Figure 1 (cartoon, rainbow, N blue to C red):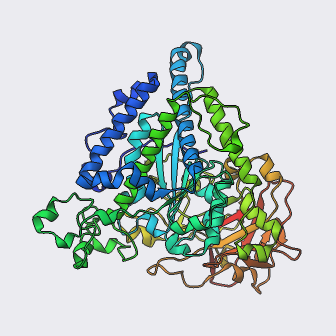
Figure 2: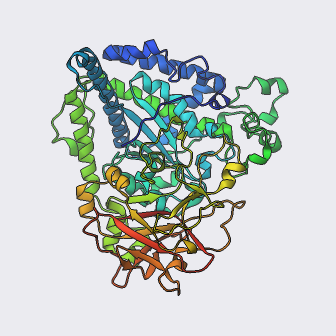
Figure 3: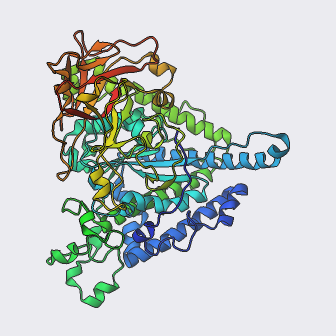
Length: 629
């Protein structure tokens, strides 16, 4: 379950959205107006939404001036963000209607409880309604080179929070992108742990790392289909529309984002100074035809927050600057606003029905309304789509899995519940204290996935304590260089890792641990778990921060010649590892003398006790994640 932390505005946000929301409350609407939701009719609700939308569009006009209409008008938006058919459009609209109805029913329940609970001593606990947009990708998606508050995820969240709040919904755009990461296998298989159980939209923005390796994307899409939140998939690779035509018939919704509007912006180096200064800030210096240096000089805007240039990294040619992120965030926000308009119109039209899919004709039609009856109807359509997905064929293009592991494992990777124990940041499992089983942390949510989390339970790699006599968990470590040599307002991603040293003797971890099992699993999951174990080595991504001396990999740990060393799973000795990572060769399936499926332990609930001992003296092993199927 997603923890909802107290939301506060970050001091850096005005540096990103100068002029936007400066004279408003956090959600962009006066609190007295927000309180009207508690007694809102459909007409009142739509009026509140219109007010919030108008405030946003006024701010958008300040950013893009006379270019606003041509760039952000509905017809243009739906040419840049497309789907194979109206099925995806209808499924996104359906998800938005579900959230609106849930929020309004929750508000009605709060009103009832306020009038009865004080005298009758009833529990007044309520469940907030959230809409979560999860951003997946490498450094380009994380916004490296910019302030984190300038990343498109931060722009998206700041733009839509007031609008969703007008409808009683908390909107989160969680930018959990991470440097140099591919979309699979680890990111895809750990999607639950990375984003948490609540996920309405998940984006794929890995083009710079995945390239034309489509097998990772297919795995990513399948894991999205298996996620508890049944998220809608947003891909930033136009080439995907050639290969993922099967997703809509399989019950999923998928949109392709391919922005192509910047040609409308003028060449800044063709303008006189007075004309240039008259351009709105979102357009000025966006394009330079001949004098490339002119635009390059204005690509970044980090000096005010990070005056020490030595603590600013990532300002390289392949990373986009703040204006690109600003545009991307506003395009996504404007598209979702138009989708909300459609959802509200549908709810206000009792003569129509959401379903346009002939396969849904056997479902009794229910007139749209803000009611429990219509909510149940919409949820039944989502459940039917998920059943369609589970019954659909699995794509067969992940060669490394199919040829090396066989059909059973291939099925497990694509259609089972993966339980992941992950060290990387940012991840919801780390923020919620699941990885360290410290679930009572007092964490404040700031914006766009940034929180007040402060590496709880982790040690700097250069300050690991002396070995402990008793067997213990592998060390959770971080690289202090990221903290000491980078401005605090930049990236939030960090390649933390689990670590085992030679001098630590045997170290033991249970995967999933009890906290992870409770949140991401159920009785059916753990009773049917197959016992397939994958360990992913740490990838030392940054040229500045290379692997520490005497670091070894998983295969070295397994193939040690030292006595009483190596890896054991539920008491069974690991004898080999099968590489399933077609890109960086980090993730390996463990194997023993009799195969790749390890026996369950009767005293554990689908969990696996993994013991690791590094045999080579003065050596250490870093790994970023373990997941079990």
